[in-house]
Amino acid sequence: MKEKIKALAQKFYPEVVELRRTIHAHPELSGEEKNTAALVANKLRTLGFEVTEGIAKHGVVGLLKCNNPDTKCVALRADMDALPIQENSKQPYCSKVDGVMHACGHDVHTANLLGVAMILADLKNELTGTYKFIFQPSEENIPSGAAAMIAEGVLNNPKVDSIIGLHVSPELEAGIFGFCAGKFMASSDEVYLSVIGKGGHAARVEELKNPLLISAEVLLALKEITNPQIPVVLSFGKIEGKGATNIVPDVVEIAGTLRCFDETLRAQLHKDITLRAETTAEKYLARCEVNILKGYPVLINDDEFTETLYHAAHDYLDGDQAIPVPSRMGSEDFAYYTHHIPACFYRLGVGNNKKGITSGLHTPTFDIDENALEESIGVMSWLAINA
Image (cartoon, rainbow, N blue to C red; front, side):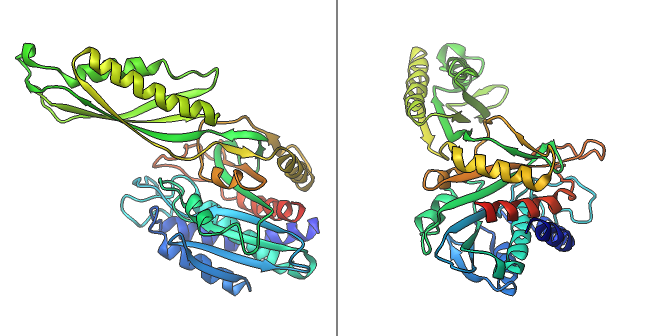
């Protein structure tokens, strides 16, 4: 079976590359994945899948029922949405949509899963159980597409026993697969602060409660919450006060992100952030309004399931291409699935230092070494069969 999968991966690889390039050239933002979803649904139908569309708006599910379909149900998931980034590339498959780009590799995830669908469909008569292919919208935005699809019953009818997903990693060389059991990716919350003081003419400082200066004090007070030893990260990426050289505004808006690996600690941190921000502003006779938007939970890879798939990947690759990787502060809405059923979310290396393919995720120059796709579709097919 392993050799059959490798042969099919080689056979379908060129088509998977073309699918990836088509999706990359026509990116769609979260909640707008209409054309990508249609492409996916049409391809699944040509492969003989039972297809359901319109789940959580643009989600697509394809069912492949093999011999004794009630034996098990393994789900495989890919996300489809792009980011609001202007691509800086001279590649022929560069984004044709102004200001929108697949800078997080979801085009790769989608094309990869379609490649797996091709392989498993070809082997249908030799396989046992049911394989549920989940193509998910809105991974990049809150509210989460994963949570919405789960709420609409994607893990039922038939009931899913386990789920597998992947994410591209440019820091890993193409063809390297990274696994981490347990708490793999952090929770993610959005933190919004409104520091409200008293503005006016910048020269009349005695009349002001300058929210810009107070905001600096608030940020310094909150800086102490970040602790790499726990680990916890509270990081701010936006501060906006609509004043001028001689105008102090009344309000400064601040936005940031909170990451950690413990749900109990997460709840306590929400209280600590609110208390520190409010009391610091009050020291300067100002106010700070705190709004924390709860995002993705901690992504927890099932220990036993992940260990099984790690060894299966080792077996397929015949070498040192399957490696352990550390947990990371990034977050992923695949985490929602991991709180319902045994799950394994792993990393696919797509970088190539020799070719200069080194740009990070969420950057205008992000790209992949497409050679990674041949092994990727083979490995995920093998993992699905061994799940």
